[in-house]
Image 1 (spheres, rainbow, N blue to C red):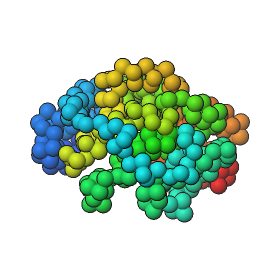
Image 2 (cartoon, rainbow, N blue to C red):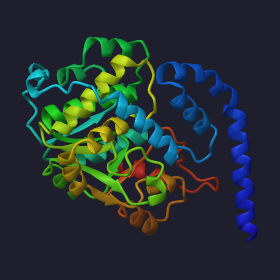
Image 3 (spheres, helix red, strand yellow):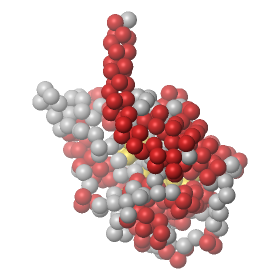
Length: 336
């Protein structure tokens, strides 16, 4: 009982701090959101920014409704409209692992380099292509007006890479793996490359309730067959969106774009719902990276999930406050 009271006070304190932190800054953004998306979306975004446990169902449904209306009249290009003249003949269809680090491999932080090395090691029979600012034009063709918005800073690298990701999967097929993913079960790669659509599905109902994808996929581990129209529809949605907006309605814009295609096409629903692989906790390895290293515990942890999502933005320690080597130390030792 005492612990529950302490937890409630702790959460209440964090909520108060968040309100004071975001109240005025987010209020300044309110007119910008109103201009881009209207009052309904602007207000729900403002309220959501003040909540400790944000991205609630009402927020997600409001953004989904807006995106559904926004994308209702888009023209989805046919295959003959796609820039197949940019297709790289060196890529064998449906057999490539796509990754991206915009600054290039030489500029990867250690945790990213370790994940990339491991992905290469478990994908020895496959091509692994690292997309960078210097080579992306060798594989895809993004319209000049969209590239201009990206270069002006209106489109961030995460959202620009979303467009690259969906065009790559449509033009070549294969598997997109974020550079901060750690694949602990390499058999998942071969299974993914056999499917029209493949991703991992989160099992936690609590987490899913705050996910714009409704837990049906994770865009950091996403693949399928060359020419699967769902990828083309998702790309077209992003292209249309950025031609009409200068800011993202939500960081998970790709999830919303995919979800609109999903709910409006029963064929996509059937294919997507049957192929996903359930994962229990893709963030568990990241949560325990700074724990003191114990070999048996570490080995159990590292093999407990099929795919883990890490982050280069978290403060990862080589030694614990007690001076002990951490799980992160041994993670780097194993993969660098």
